[in-house]
Figure (cartoon, one colour):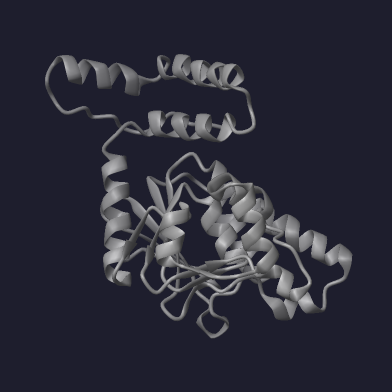
Length: 267
């Protein structure tokens, strides 16, 4: 890893020689629980400059992210709870809307807010010991960082209701079957290596095309097929405005590898 890695109070940010960034939530004594400070630091990082590809993980221990910080929430007024939920939703929207691929690398418990972080990533890998769930009802709460919205998109409304109403946990094998994760690995080292390999493979392609594709996939949710096709067509047209499209097609015709360079800046 790069020696210039940046350390925050609750986050560790590392970028390797291929430009792949690993963002680690690091509160081991609290099982990496999402306090207001953690959420604020995540929001700050995710609002910053784009990266080539991002791996989101938790510091080694029993949990990826055990959930939101219950000690903090227990004393919150309704107004404070609303602000806390809004901050959590901001973080998950920033993950979802980031113009680069984001992979959740889950090793251990991903419960409550931790599971909601996973749901906001492009996709997730997990170790066999990982456990997922939205157990907020046990605390007299509901998922507030996007779980009610995003879980049903992955597993369907009926399964999402069952998981949220009961608060039950699912192991890695069931999470794979339900579509919560894309692949399951033996241990943390294998997990992180696979995530890096995938992002390196993505990074060989046009960052402009990947960003446009992500925007389309997010943008067509809830739309009719004709509406979705309009969104796709607008992005397809935009691809023709990029240097990456010219380079990619020229390289194909010349039978050489493409050299894409930096992506176009986006809002």
